[in-house]
Structures are given as structure tokens and as C-alpha cells.
Length: 605
Ligand SMILES: [Zn+2]
Image (cartoon, rainbow, N blue to C red):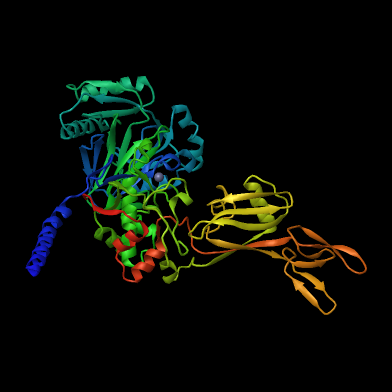
């Protein structure tokens, strides 16, 4: 009877598991307390703000489709091209030399174009190859550059203005191309122009009389079309192919951005390769911002090898991949004001290096953890990490202010076991440096007599460090001594897990029997008339010998910090992850060790 009930219980458990397992696998987290987890596409800021571009150089080994991406994510395809390279310029007043009979002759002139006269490119028109350059706001500004061009041997230069005639809307790009061909046979140069509809634009006129004479010629060549004059617009975008064809002009409609998507695995912007597609928008200074549109895993392939050496054990790389993926979801929209999710900087988001940084090991770590992120209470966890904990990780509230349940200090012998290069470090700071540190942190303590650890957290990290000098005393709290130059401290200690000792010039004392050397005088016991006393902290001590009264100086020349670990100590230790992986632990065990109580969820990917 008893045996039967056990068998039944086992059967129930097995049945329960077999039912629960598929449920668990398919019950993917899709939405977590305001954080959408069902969209694996991310917007990564590549060029923006100080790094925005005057022009963009784009390359792809395969066909590239240019289109417009609306705010709702739909794409209006415009045209495709296979020339391998493109330049994207904004409209401006420019200077043009030529036409030249062949590309080589134009390239020769292009090579002499003075950098001070703005970016230049080759433009192929029916009359031949032109070298067009400059980014001028007015005709007057452009003209001022003519002497410079003449000095570079570039003559016969004309000014190209921004006044244009544009046709009525045409039913398709093919219809627009047909009109352009008819104009060419009449000796007129037209270009494809998209402002929601396809049109043909003609002329780079500098004044209205030129526009009027152009209109006369156009009416003769294409009498059925209505031509409207269009003022210049610095925010119109011109896409030019490698071989100099002006593919089209995009009139930069509000809410729509120009986009390029390639059939190849990656495209290059300014010579750097990235997976996914790109969006090009003009900022307030009319400079190009470039945003990469990529699947989270394509982004992570450029992140993981920058955050952890790709030669490290595979399970450690997988743990790093999950940490980085979780960070991406937790910080989506971080740069919403600039129009993207995450930037490429380690000092702000995570270091992202693009395809150049990719490594087969880290790529595989990303692929094999596809869709896995760390959740706590249904939200992506704050997966802080650091290089080496030095033996014990830290409660987050001991580093910053707010406690987070899964970011608690845990014993961490694994970094040292992996042979961490930060397992022990030593840093010596001179008396002068220590005085400077005190001043930098707001107090002039005079000559520093002692640097003392006042209290430690249970992990062993120093919570309060005091600096005692001849003119005062001050305390440094928590991470203050660790932060690098230029932020809030000058120590730049690798971690706050350390001991500190003073170095003092030894004091030589002679007794009746021998000569001895004392390492400083603080704490030394001396026999006085009033009994045995311990010498306190002072820059010098009065001594009386049989013959004279003098002073012995006791000022530390330097302070030696001996410590372990590197970083704040919160969350995963990367060296610890390496050590755990080397001991055979899986990436899940690594993550559960450093983030206590998290859940590893499978989200749509
Ligand atoms: Zn950022």
C-alpha cells in the first residue's frame, strides 16, 4: 500500500513536470512592469552630438536599399543601388569644377581640393564629371574660397546655388526617370526628388533670373509639366553613389528618416562596420546623426568582447552576454531625447565596438543565450558587474544609496582561483599627493601625519578612511578614494578593499648599550620621569639627552595602500565568473551566484 502511494506520487510529479515543462518553455516574458520585452530591435547611437558628421560615407559589398522609416516603424522603399559606396550630403551652396571627360581627371582635382573649403565629391552629370564641394550658407561665402581653390590649381570654378525648379508629382519613380531622360536629350540636367511623391528637380541656381531662364527651357522640353520654383533647404539630403551619380534628393519630411538597409551582413559608416540598418537624420546644427537599427544580439556581438576578453571561458562569456542583454532591455530609451536607445560608450551605456570587435567565441556566447535575460519581480534586473571583487562582493547600498535585494555581498574566492591579475595590488602615495587629495576633497589638513581606516563593511571594504594632519582631520567615505582623477577623488585606487600603512624615515636612537632604529615615533613607548608613556601623533617630538634638548621629526614620507580586487564590487565579478567557469559551473550558476534571487527568463527574440 505504502509502496503504491509513493509510486503514485512519483508518477504525479513526473506528469506534473511533463506538463509544466512545455508551459514554462512557451510562457515567455513579454512585458514587465512597463518595460516591453517583446521587441528585440534596438536603436544604437553611433554618430551624434559632438560626433555628428558633416557628410556620411557608407559602404556595402551588396545591394543597399534606401528608404524612409516612419515613426510607426513602417518603411517606404525608395530605391536600391549596388555601386558599393555612397556619400550622403545635405544641401548647401557649393563650388563646382569641371566638367571633366573622365572620372580619373575629376579624381585628380578632387585630391587637390583644400580641406578648408569643405567636403568635396565627384558628381557625374550628362556633360561629364564635376568636382563639387563646400558646405556654404551663401553664395558670398562660397566665392571667398575661390582664391584658395586657384592656389591649389583648381580653376574654372562655378558657384552652385540652392534655387531649384521642381516638377509636379509623378506617379512613380519610373515615370520620374522617364522625364529625366527626356530632359537630358534637351540638354537639361534633372534629378530625382522625393518629398512624399516623386518629382524631378532641375537647377542649382544662385538667383531668380537664372531660374526664370531655366523655366523657359523646361517648358519647351516638357510642356505638359508644371514647374514650381523651390527655395533652397539646408535640410534636404542628397544621396550620391560611388561612381558619382546623384541617386536622389530626399526633402526630409517631418517624422520620417532616411534609412539604408543592405543585403550583406553588415555595412560600414565612415569605415566602421555594423550589423543591421542605419538611419540618417540631421541635428539642429544640420549635421548628420547616424543610428544603427539592430537586433539586440547583433548589438551584443559588438559589446561582449569589449566588456570581457573573448578568449575567456565560454560559460563566463555566456554570463557576460546575459548581463549585457539584460542591461540593454533595462535601459531601452535611455537616450530617447536624442532618438535612440543606447549609445556606444562604456562611460555611459556599454562599450559597443561594432563588427571589428566581434570574435567567434563571444558571437557564439550571444547565440547560445538567445532570448535569456535576468528578471527580478518581473523587471529586467540591474546587472551591475565589475572586474574583480577581491574576495567578497558588496551590497549595492554600501556603494551607492539604494538597497536592491539581489545585489548583496557574497563570498567570492573564484577570482583569485582564476589567477586574477588584480588579486593583490599596491599603490604608494607621497606626502605631497596625500595633502593634495585632502585639499581636493575640501579640507587643508596641513602636513599629513596619519591615514587610518576607521571602519569597514562586513565584506572587508573600507567604509571610512581618515586623514589626520597638522592643521586638521577629514574623512573620506565609501568609493571616494577609488574614483579616478577628475571626478571626486584623486586616489584612483583599484578598489576599496585595502589596508594602509605610513612610511616614515627611521629614527635612530642610541642607548647605553647599542644603536637602534625605530620606524617613526608614533606608538613608541618611552620612559619618562612620570613613567612609561606611548608617543602620540605629532610631526616632531622633543627629546632630552644628558647634554642637550632637541627635536626628532616623525612625518610620514608616503602612504602605502595594499589591496585586492578592481571595481565597485557590486554584482558579478568578471574574474570570479572566469574562475567559476574554469571549475565547471554553467553561466546560469554563475549568474545565480552573483545575483541572488533573480529569474532567468526566455523572452521573444
Ligand atoms: Zn549612453
